[in-house]
Image 1: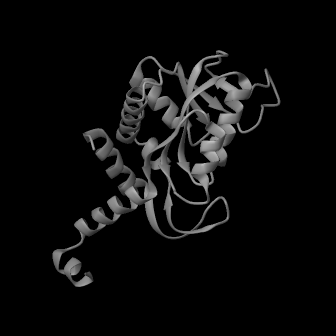
Image 2: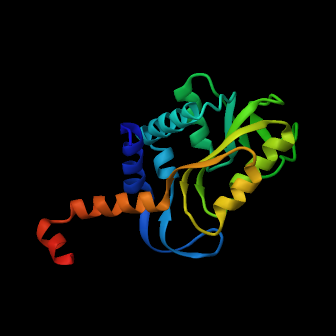
Image 3: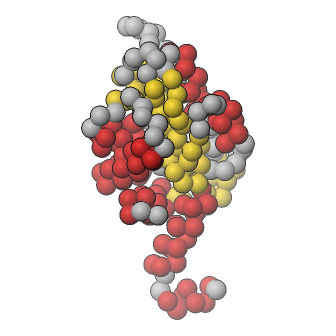
Length: 200
């Protein structure tokens, strides 16, 4: 794992991951919670997000003109990647068409036929990612790839997103297992040696 990716994983584990009892937006119960925005909106975290996503996009030779996703989980990722790249444009997908002005659902970059990458922060059920995919295609974008920062590996999110994205590939930078392991490592490293040895 390269430096930027490892540093991003460390930041997510420290700032965004919590163990406990939580109710997710889907209504399901979970023993952990990931709030990626505490990382994607962090000054250093934002730069790392931009670097890692851009590196992955270039490695896969997708050659998009723009990057975008459903507001608001995707918002800081879109801006970070656009700024770090110095060349990719950004667009945001509203959850519904606005009821005033032009009434458009896609904000920012709007060039029909352009190759784009759809991004999201966390993929659980995949619903928000799928909304962005459908809206982008309805507008007239060609989807080169779909990416999420952390995949929760549950609720059949991956197969649903893969089906919606096809033939474009869906990839995750990290999965929840990666972040959990790093979080526990960090927690163990901060415990006094005597306490840590007793717990094993």
